[in-house]
Length: 235
Image (cartoon, rainbow, N blue to C red; front, side):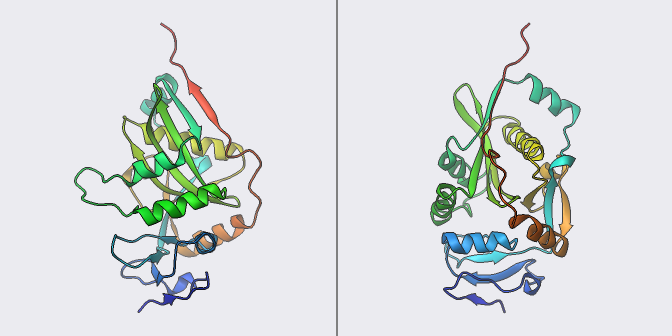
């Protein structure tokens, strides 16, 4: 049995999360700004299906990317050098989260429902959520959105409408964060896509300790100001 959250924006200890389903910690509550910030300060995130109560999670293994360990295979390095694209932060956060919410091929729904979109828009307006956007020929073709608390960055979801567009966004984000002294991106769940870029699994206790060491630190000035234009070499 998992606890049902009270109106106060607090959570039970993550050690109480279930092993099956892995990481389910609590249910109920709301998606208010104080509750979401309280969750992220403890490495907890919401994830639930339409029609279900809000469910809160802290998995036993967490997929993380150390920004210094970003892996760029030779073929992808050529893409980063030679393809025409622009990467910017926070130009159109709402377009990014709605693109992430669109059902993938073979799926009939999405966990990023309207209530979640509105909650993360509030986080964005409060300066705690950000978008990393890949543009080509004036069109938004890929990207991701993330939550930032202190020196901790939580990647939430990504999308692509063009080959490698989300990978380009993640590569630029990791490099930029590394330059500003932010060393860890939470990627939540294991995927082959993330593993190919250097992400790895971290046990919950290690992850929570890493979060605690980072969320109390100030956000570095200018870290969410970024615009990169890439022009291919002229023939």
